[in-house]
Amino acid sequence: MPRLPPALEPLFPVVKRGHRFATRRVGAISRAISPALGERGVPLHAHPTSAATAAAEPGAVLHEAGPAEHLEREAPLGTPAGLEWWRGVTSYDVPPRFVLELPGGQVIGNYSAHLSARGVLDHETSHYFDVEGPREHPIYLRTRLPEPVTVPGSLVSLATRATGVNYYHYLMDLLPRWGILAEAMPGFRPDYLYANTEPRFGRQLLDLAGLSGIETISPRKHSAVRASRLLVPNITNKACLAPRWTTEWLRRNLPPVSAASGRPTRLYVTRGSAKNSRRVVNEAEVLAVLRPLGFEVVDPGALSVQQQIDTFAAASVVVAPHGAGLTNLVFAPPDVRVLELFNPSYLNPGFWAIASNLGASRYRYLVGSGPAPAAGAPMRAVYGDITVPMDAFRVALEDVLA
Image (cartoon, rainbow, N blue to C red):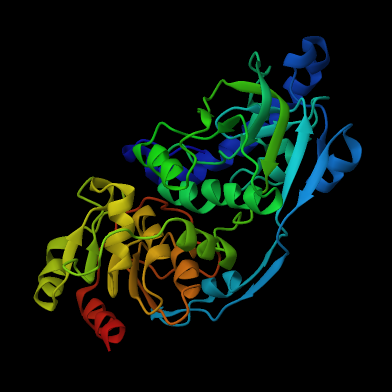
C-alpha cells in the first residue's frame, strides 16, 4: 500500500490491518456483482501459481529461465547483540525464474494485477505486500475493473508493488524482471513496456538498462491494458531478501561510468529533517563523530541514478539510517563496510541481504534508543524517526572500521 502522510505514519499497523479487512469485505460484494458486469467484473477465480495458469488458460505458455536458489546466511552482528528477529530471515528459498505468456491478457492498476483472457487472476505474478491469498489482493477493493485499452502486439509487464514511488522496489523488483525476460527469451524486444515513468529515477533506470527505445505505458491507479500478447516475468524478491542473481545482474548491467578517484570513500547517507521519515533526530551529534574521520554527507535523492551508482561504487564505508538510498549498496565494492541504523520498532533485512551478496563486506546494525525489538517482526513504526545512542554508536563505528 502507498505511504501515508508523515503525520499519520504512526497509524500504519492499524491502517494495514484495516486495508486487508476491507479487501475481504468489499471483495465479497464485488465478486457477487461481477457476473452482471461482464469483462468489467472483478476476477471470480484465481490461479495460485503461474504454472497452474499456464496449464489451465488457453494459449498460455510458461517460458523457463534460471533455476531456484536456496539462500542460507549468517545472522548479522550488531547492537543489541543476538536479536532473535534476525533468525527468521537467514534462510530463504528463491523461486525459479520464468516468464508467463498470456494471449489477450490484461494488466490492471498501479499494483499490476495480471488477468488471463478469461479474466482469471494469476496470483503469483500479481504479488502485493502482506497479502495472504488471492482474496486479499487490492484488486478486490474495486467494484468493477477499469475500461481496458487494447494495444496490438506484445506488452511486457515490469511494474509491481511500490515501483511508482520507491527506489528500492524499482531497482530490486522491476528492473530484474527485464533480466528474467532476457534470460528466458534472448534477443526479444517487445512492442510495449508496462513500467513506471513518473519518478525521476524510473525513466533514468529504464534508459540505463537499455530500454529507452521501447514505448512505455506507465501504470495508473485506474488503468487497464489488454495486449495481444502479454508477457509477465515473475518476482523473485518477494521477501526483500535480495537473491544473489539479482545483485549480480544489476552489477553487470548498470556499471559505474566515472573513475573512483576524487570521490568520497566514507559516506553518511542522510534522510533529511522531516518528521516521521526515518530521519536521525540527533544527526548533528552523529556527524560530529563522523566528519573528523573523513565521512562526507550524501543525499541520494539529490543525485542522478548514475551519480548514485558511481558514488557507491567508490565507497569503502557507509553509515546510514535504514532507507531506499542504501539500495545502492548493490554497486559498492565487495569489501564495503556498512553500519545501518534502525528505529527499534522497525527492522528490515533488505540491505543486510544485499551486503551479504557482495562477498567480503562487513555489515553491522545499531538499533536506536527505545524499547528493545521483540522477537516477532517489529513493524509498528515503518517510518519512525531514529535517535542514535551515541556511546553505542561510537563502539559500533569502531567495530565497522576495525
